[in-house]
Image (cartoon, rainbow, N blue to C red; front, side):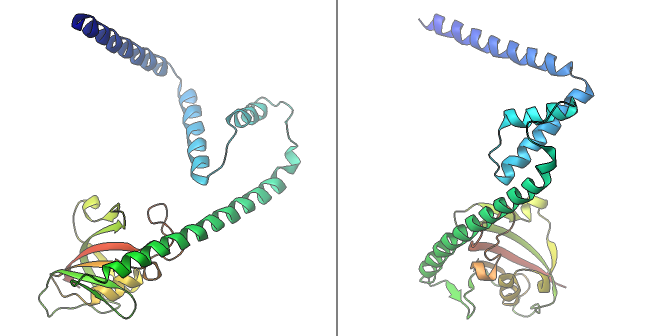
Length: 234
């Protein structure tokens, strides 16, 4: 019984290997124009998924084929610009509505987290609502100003622990920043630090990226957490 199982496993592995080999041989025979065609299609698909379009792949392919071959169009080309302007406006309105709903939900979660976090004896809260925890004290002397230049190491996380940015991701070297051009939570919080200090900041959405969020990394209305080391005050 065991020998049969091993034999079947070997056959399965061999079959997969042959399939992969045949697929590679097929792709190796593609011309540059064919490869470009495939990658253009891939790029279109990825962009449409990113924008949230419910794409009919068959109609998409049909439109490309009809235009390239000069065939009659399924829909009047003269109506395209007017329709697409209206369609894109509806898509934008839908996105804005979803973002507002998401921001409200995330803000509620953030407020609940901050209220509970405030009970931690190690956590201090400023008048603006910024919370911070001292992980290591600095020299107690050299502090930055609201518009000063600093060199820092940091790790930024969402409340679920997801790391959305860090100096470690960029090689681990400190980064120079102007405190006048960062989020309000950073401008306020880093002024509390002195050279060499390490703080953890719990930053509500209003002091971070607000209802807009930041790209795909930080959701609308998100409370975020930053561990910051103040390496140098410029």
